[in-house]
Image (cartoon, rainbow, N blue to C red; front, top):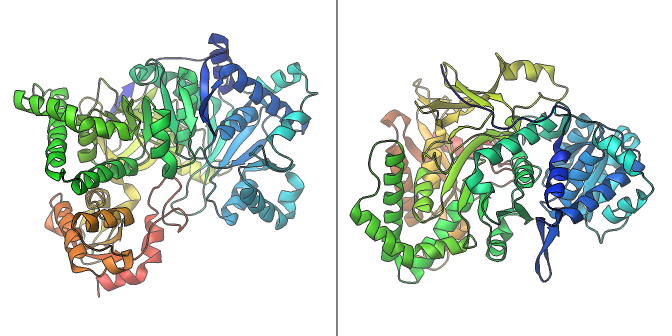
Length: 609
């Protein structure tokens, strides 16, 4: 059993809560742009003064509508500035925010509203308001308890944010302050429901202390990222996900300007105009940017130049990594010279794809391929990979600018201890660990051991306290021959191929390991274009010998990571896409392995026929 800890850097008064972070930021500089909103003529700054006024007005509307301290209020919307206003208004009114993913099915919405005891719902669009209305129509109990549904777009029919704020005009400041100050660090701030890779989502009780202590300590832990001059970032992850919410509170604490974009589809276009200095990214974005740059070079007749630049970036970063581990002196003279050349010819174009001013990226939500991390770091876009779960209020470990080891998820954040149990399971204790699962004593009994939260993930700690994730405990496959196989590394390597969207390794109880593979439509189009071939549909590509041969190369490369008994012996190309809407991915883009294996049981059976 190994253990690593990082001492707490910042303490807070037990009687404070998340709203105090906003008041402190306002007191420091009311004119400072806490947020930027995208309008028809570009991005518009929202100073702390204006944001606080909006929050207080909306909070008064909630109080006027009968919200009592501790009442649960749901928010179902895409990521937006309004989401942030509503979140803080709920806290100012003394309520508990319950995020609901906008992609949730009616049955999931009903479960969360019922389990959390929600009193009011904020809906981002008329379609979402109608969905909630349909759920209420089918439940007398919910209809009796809920006050109503509020539209979050200002142009919507009443009740909307504007009408709710107007209704609170008569609420005294002293009454609002009584509501705002009722909660302390130990009190509930949010019920965040797990994405639910299996079974019904569980409500994680995230306290004001979880959010506030993590925020203040992360700022002290990563000052180079968060306290740089005119620090700003663009949020595209769903605010229903705890990682996005936690980062939003971190930005508030640091005074970093935050913008919102509703999803990954709009991200690259908005990056050009927002020009963030740091960016929270999921691995799929890195993969898309790299694949797009590779394709652009190929069609422009610069494939060899780009290939050399990519190889140099990776070599340069690997030498930096060896130096950081005390195993070398850094990049050699020839590598540095080649790096300087490509830093003039190639790398600036990559940096421009992220807005041109990104000094750091933070990768989370799922594993990042080390090759991609080296590629971007070598191209002048440092990647700080971290690790966390809903139950740890997102980050519990992270790499820092001064302490980075590619392939690891970093060291414990301040106030956190990481322990690796005898069976390899990662255990966490610290400032971000949640209070427990809502109304679920059995789950709580199973989730903790000796005061540590059992993550269900497998990993190891090196001598300097850097954590490496090796897999998910429940995802381990045991073949018919008794061989234990961790699917994660194999899937990650296959997925790195430009043609591949997803790879799912199967073989539990089977005579050998196999895989289900889906194709990336954009990668497929690029592959055909680069070879002067006519476009192929995904369905046609699944039967094309050249496509299968290309994917086989990716499988062969993945098999080099493991023994023969663990290698992928066969694979099936699926004419399908794994998405949140199809039920195969969580809203944070994690694979629902059980749903995939169940949904494609016939294809799995054919692999072993």
